[in-house]
Length: 200
Image (cartoon, rainbow, N blue to C red; front, side, top):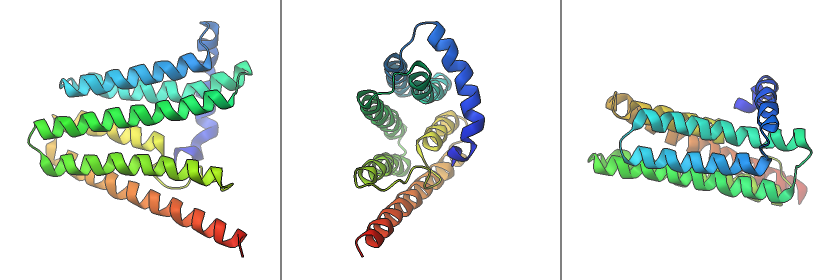
């Protein structure tokens, strides 16, 4: 969904990316920083520092958005960089959401813990659907409401609400799971439709 505002965000990211280039940061360094910050956010989540965890989740997402811009501006766009970026994204997603599951189980919230585990599975499936579709020559970037940026923002809000508004947290988590399921279904439909038309 946020891809619709791509031009607006690209202008902002370009300014930040140029600043990082002046500091000597490479695209892979940005990707690695995104991973480290993401893992740190999961650790702070497990320890109950929800405000710090929220800030780190958002910072990890910003760094992840910047690495591609830094690569384009520096002329260092590579397939290896794209692969590392994709793998590190999945590691951060898994670490953060599984830490949320752990926290919910510790707080004796089994229903919410199960929903968070389902969200983790759906997040991985949404990303896998895109990767598999692209390997089959089908472009589904931008399909569905819950792409990675939206999922990270949702997780950040969930973590922020966890110790402040439990009732709102449960409903937002449920909505996030439902929207993620719809996104996965939409991506599967688009791929099946595209391949079916191609093979007629």
